[in-house]
Image (cartoon, rainbow, N blue to C red; front, top):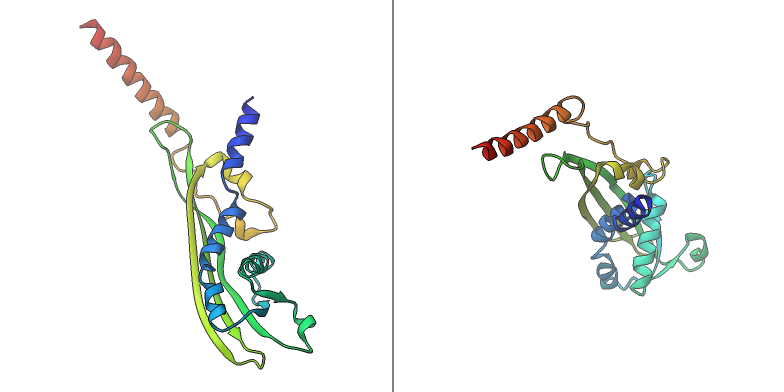
Length: 196
């Protein structure tokens, strides 16, 4: 029963990839309208740079632009009849972990998760002239259970999805001593008030 409950709860929490996708969507909100203002209804997408998530960026951008009525082509298909090129350079696409906290003095440890995306986009016309250059960014944040963080990271090949966890502050020997002290104080107060 516990395993089923944990599986259902994890299904409700977005994975690191889903959080990164939300940040990417935020950074691309204005791109379809910007391209439409230049009558860019057929384009080639060129992702430049060495980011290991370039495939993910291209897939997401292609999907967004297609949903907005913009046709996407591969460069070799359009060699005879060139069209506009949208060059995208990911300046940042990463999921990082922030502060560690507890909702109460005792309780499950939680960690802040931050997905950041910053893109530089350049639109070139068919002869290579720059029509538009814009930088855009998006940030998504949430708080997850410390124990769920490893499950939500994703593949170890995608280092941009699994930031370093902060140091496990407040753990070790000090935490049980504090919790025991609080519980003992509460028990003492309860019985001392009843004795009077």
